[in-house]
Amino acid sequence: MDEKKPKEDSEMDGHDGRVHFPTDQVIEHDSEIIVKKDSEEHVSVHLGFLEIHHQYEIRFTIKDTLGEDVLQDPLQNLHVKILEIPPSEDGEGHEVVLDLHAHKEKLWKEELIITNTDKTASLTITLHARVLGKGKGTPSLKTGIHCTGINVDDDSEQGSDWQGFD
Image (cartoon, rainbow, N blue to C red):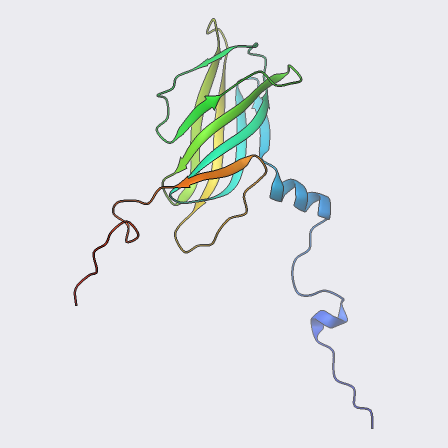
């Protein structure tokens, strides 16, 4: 006798029980930094997931009308520093290179302001990311984001040689 085994629900509909998105959508959202021009004075940059206590170099291009040379206050942000901001190859904006320290586990939002040389126009760049805490996994970094180091917090158990009470 040939007994037929009932098919699982996932076998019946040809799916494996996971959500599937179109390939082009997955590639766009998973691998690229999303730069969205909200207005002439504001750009939102979505970096995706980062890991707590990690140092990153981030590189992306913005479209702007500030001219070739721009100014920025090097002390405007403790956790993000603009390393370079040369004109983009197409001449329609700038390539931004940042040094970022993911210092807290949270939905992370920081602002940087760049101005033209005569200070008559400015652009606010708002950076968005989700910083994962210890033990929450290792994020897949988007194109243009590179981990440059790990900063162990002095108060963390990794940074201490104290063995605890017996």
